[in-house]
Length: 191
Ligand SMILES: [Zn+2]
Image (cartoon, rainbow, N blue to C red; front, side, top):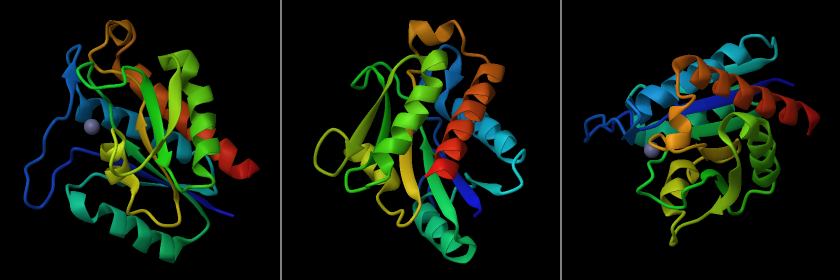
């Protein structure tokens, strides 16, 4: 069975809103960094004959969940949706987080698999359910419209943290994407 990974580089604009660069720090901005992570995910996927990667970052921000659902209706198979973000230290909880939909049965295990895989690179990240109405609502908004694919919102580290400064280079971001993809693909093949 084929596996499709939908990768959403967020902050890429809305029809009624210009693109923004997201969080900033250590000489980076969120969009520049998450795009490199997306590149790594895409590069990893092409090494598998049965894995597709679809990057969603062309600015049609508000329709992206609908597009994922439409693509999935046509493509089928196993599917994962990854919304890529990075936080800055002025926002809580000051630890990397991997969010899954609070009602998702498969989300927690996938989030844990990704957290385990990237721990050596970025430190501990916390798999966390997200829902409307509490501090997780922003993450919830990034995945709530995705139906069948297992949807995660990744905020794997803080772009302005002193710890990230040590390793925050383009190659490391692409390598992080490769590790995320490998963990997702391994987990999806095994389940
Ligand atoms: Zn963001």
